[in-house]
Image (cartoon, rainbow, N blue to C red; front, top):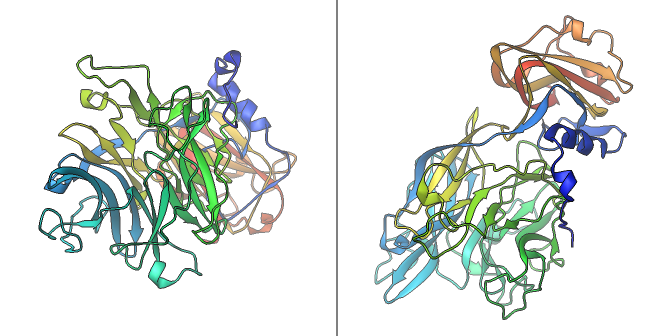
Length: 481
């Protein structure tokens, strides 16, 4: 198994020491980054840290995006997938309603012009309790639909939108418009159970294949096809499979979480981060199955949201064991499975990302709420008032200018030095040549006394030295603009 229990003494090491250890595990060869934006979600580019540390940031809760409003939503809304599609944002989400005498799980559709205010259009596609005046797009077979728009240039227009759903196995769906769906084939595409909760699929343009992340068992007894939803001695984990044609898939394998402690990861919410091609982010729901916060409820278990990232889609960094999103003060979020992060990240302004989370599962107040985070703001390198510095590993870039995403206090600052691979300042780009910058900007331009043109250094190994005081550094990129 790839997920292993971390030794007790390792778990007790201070965070800064852990960061130093993880940074030194990478090879010393220069990292080719081209003009791709670099985030500090892992220690891949960290050469050394002095007086600074990487910090995980949490989103703030904003307004309710999807609430229970219709009979077909009566028993809940959850498991949403969302993305920008042209000049609008689109979302597909699970609904649970009472169809005649039976409770039924289905898929509904919503859209938005700004990613904040959502409407549920009357589509007239599916009949529910004698009427087709609803926003339903799929009633089965299968539930927990995970939708994506296929960027594969070889995909026909009749299959431009794709999705997977769960029965006992995983089925594949296609659609020309995201509203009218059909099965790719009667046979499932994935059969190595278990597949409960929300399984995610998408076209990975960076690697040129389809990828699916599903439920799995990280340790313990193997669950057979006839097993119940109980995991027995097993620990809930996450698996990955890939495909070139969306019909034939590789064998599912557990993602690699290194030596971090085993925890129940109930969902995955995997999504490629479009602002940094090749970077995959995950926001699993961490399920603590030994706790009950409300003695009046029979269900046991509480959960929060954790954060992890990957550069290859299989090995995931869990530098941060702390929660990305805590349950918070609302006691209704301290119930069994009451908090899941939905799948998708929207940039809803030049400075703001919107994520979405289901709250209050199994309660009449269940809803999907928008979360707000700074653009690229998952992790920062933070310097205290006393100051500190980060020096990167050797890297090779393309472009003429260096831009950084940063925030400082009124008294804080950042300066940048460009060094050769051996750590020596390059003439014209030393710390003394770089005026202090301060403020709060997503794409701030770095200048030296001689100007901002760094093109003569492109294609050769260099290091970046960030000297900071009372500041956060979120990301940097090289480019022509």
